[in-house]
Image (cartoon, rainbow over all chains, first blue to last red):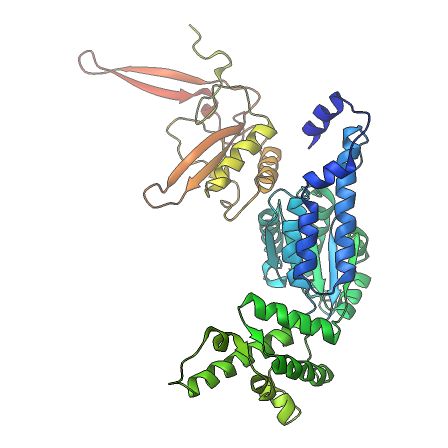
Length: 308
Length: 144
C-alpha cells in the first residue's frame, strides 16, 4: 500500500475525473446486483453505497498525496432472525474486494466454538488461527454475544475478545470483522464491552421485512430454483404470510424459505399422485394454490409440526 | 580462498541473494498459497546441512488465503528468536508430491561463523570429511 502511494505521489496531477474513476471501478455493477438480489434492506444498501463512495474518494485523494488512515470497516449487523445478516455478510466480502478494500474477499464464518478454547492457554492460539485464516477477507462472527458470558467470570471468551480487539485495531488493512446477532442481545454485549463498541464504526440495523417484501423475496427464491407461483398460488402465499407473520417464531426470510421448501414437497407429491398423465415443463415449474393452502397455518392456525 | 565471504548460510531458495524484504517474502508466500500449499515457519540454531528437521514455530498453517497471516507468524518468530535461523516452508500435500516445494530463509543471526572442514586420514590414502558448524560447539541457545 505504501509503495503504490509513493509512486503515485511522484507524478502529481492537477485534476482527476471522479466519473471516470467510478466507471473504471465497476462499482455500479456491484451496486446494481445488490439492488437486484437483495429485497428491501435500504439502510444496508445506503451504508454500502457510502462506503463505496468513501473508498473511491480515498483513492483519488491519494493521487494528490492527501494521505489519510485506512477507514475502519468493522461492522455490526443487528436484527431479528432471517433478516439477511448472513447473506449480506457473504456479499460484503465480494463487494469489498471489488472496491479494492480487501485483497482476497473470502468470508470466514465462525461462532463462539471456533474462537474460544476449552482450557487455559487454548483460546489465544485458537482465536489467532481463525484470524489468520480470515486475513485478506472478512471474518464473520455469528451470534457474537455468546463470546462474553458475564455469569461465568472464568470464561475464556473475554480472552478471545481481547485478541480480536487488538487485531481489529492493528491489522485494519488485513481484515474486516463483522459481528452479527439479535439486536437486544447485541446491545447488552456492547454495554459490557465498550471497547468493542468503539472499534466498530458501522452499526447496521436489519429491520423486519414488510409483507410485500417477503412476497418479493419468495418470488426471487423460487426464480433462483426455477420455480414460480401460479396467480392463485401467489395470492394464497400472500394470505399465508399474513397469517404466519402473526404467529410465534416467525423468522422472516428463513420462514419464507421453509414454507417454500414444504410447498415444493407438496407439489412433487401432487404431480406424483397424478402420474400417467403427461407433464409439461410448466407443470414442473408451477406451484399452485393448493400447495400453499395445505399448510397447517390455514387448517389449524398453527405451525407444521413445530417447524418455524 | 574465501568462497563464501561473510559465511552466509546457503540453504534453500534465494540464499545466494541478499535477504528478502518483507514485500518479497509476501510475494513468495502468495505464490505458495495460490498453489494450495501449506506454509509453515521453522527455526533452528544448528544450521548443519544435514539438519533437515528444524523446530516448528507453531503448527503449519492450512486453509490460509492471504500472506498477511503468515507474515504475522514470521514476525513473531523473529521476535522470539532474533539470533536464530528462521525459514519458511511450503508443503505440497498433493499425491505424488507430498513434500516441501519451497523453503527459504527469512532470518539470520547477525554473526554467522560458518562451517569448518575436518579431514580424517583413514586406511590407505582415504580421507573422510566432516563439516562442523563453529557455532554448534556451544550449547543450544548460546550459539549466536
